[in-house]
Length: 261
Image 1: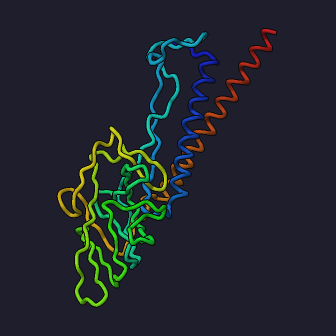
Image 2 (image 1 turned 180 degrees about the vertical axis):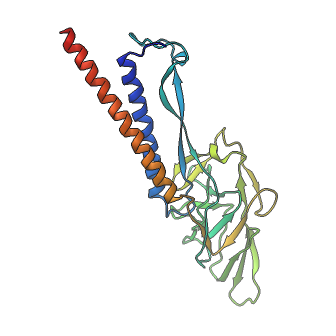
Image 3 (image 1 turned 90 degrees about the vertical axis):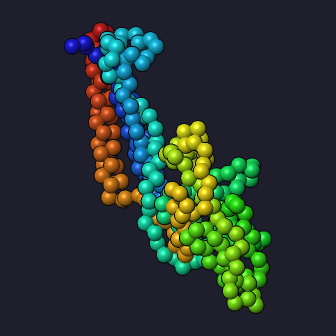
């Protein structure tokens, strides 16, 4: 069995500290967003570092190819499992049951995606998210509208003043991704498509593999507080262990230096 130098132990402990700190930060973000509409929890994933992955071993490193060299972050994966549906009875609170994302037009002309259906109507009658970005396709509610209803198929029906029956004004479409975990988070509960996520499949709700819309309801976050607390305790214990390993290695190096002196 090959010997591992003290400097190697220091590097392994350091990599462990960094990965566990990242895991704790990810868990903290999940807990902080437990009440955020449509929020999807993230999970830190790690991979083992091996000597053979290094171009050149550090001086004094006695490890052989294939021997452990610590850990690193491989991904911070979003878990897009369905959140609970909570009834709000607000006209523009919309929840998606199943796969799919609402499409949001960004100021630069690109399209972002979200599961947060807490929409609003701006001064021009357009449907927007809380940040003011417009829902795509753009829907403008007439000023004389007295009743609004969104069907499970995304049809937006409006009853105008003086009319007894609602009329279909427009239809909301949803975007579905083959690999939603590949989406990039850009803040405000919005995501951007990437090469990993693939191009979106835009379709009417309830058709194909696209989910349906529930009007007057919101999707809760999919964060399980009890599981997050278990993961937090595990990560904190691992962090504490790495801290002790770092201190022991440092103490041993100090003793060696004193003996040489």
